[in-house]
Image 1: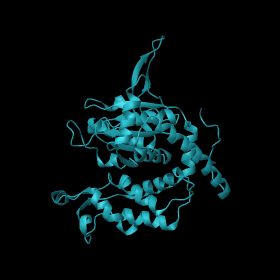
Image 2: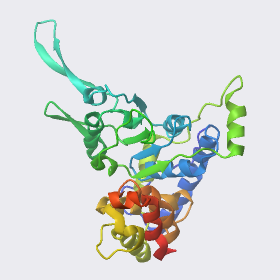
Image 3: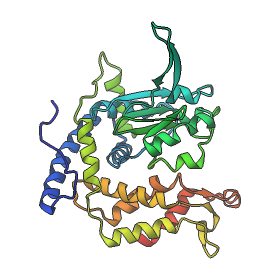
Image 4: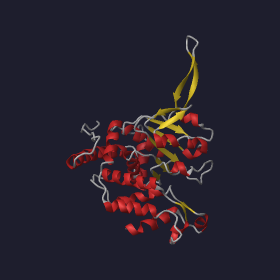
Length: 339
């Protein structure tokens, strides 16, 4: 059964005592969410944590990994457990923007009067899974930009608001796979985190093998509602952040931008993270602290979330790639002063 513990973060600023109580209540609920996810998704603890951080922050995530690592199943499971209206798009090269956003059709009434009626596309949901987003053409990929940033779409000059909360969890095959298109930088920047999905360890794969090849599988069970998730997102923004953490975030993000005097791998940065990266890192650190039942984020949160926040917001120059320098090496150098 779904926990009946009341949770409803206040719309305005809460007192310290109220904030502590809300954090404790939400911590119990998130513990239940994790347990329910663990009944369906085996292993992948860090991936699950980063996906929950994304949703608690009110953002979007890009899940990257080879086929068969349960990326699609994770998104479907999150939709059920968090009580979200979820829909799925299977991206293909011939997918058009109207297939995602919707379109207007001409209808004729019984009196002969003609008018246009808007037919909403699958983007009108609370949790949209764009499966294999890098198989869609750049034109179709760009159709999600306005929806992801503004929470609305424009069709025939009319704005149509999207349901709230609204999240896009897109899956992507590595660019080395055939038949893929790299996402434009403007769209990459809209994703709060880039979650790299690796192969499960042996024990987790063994559990998965036994659980999924029998007569029946454990279906995901709800643990939250959409309104409770929105309340949790409001609570995340009320978590206090110390000056030392704010300074660490600023120093880290700014060190990822091109500098003539940079040394080591950093000298090969072609373009780096903008202010949206600082905002994403701040929110993600707050959400991670909340997920762990802590009342404020620490430098450890900044270090843990720097790679998923920054790796899709930076690029290494051609000269750097020629010398084998990667974005991961650049981020490792950037985080050294904080360790």
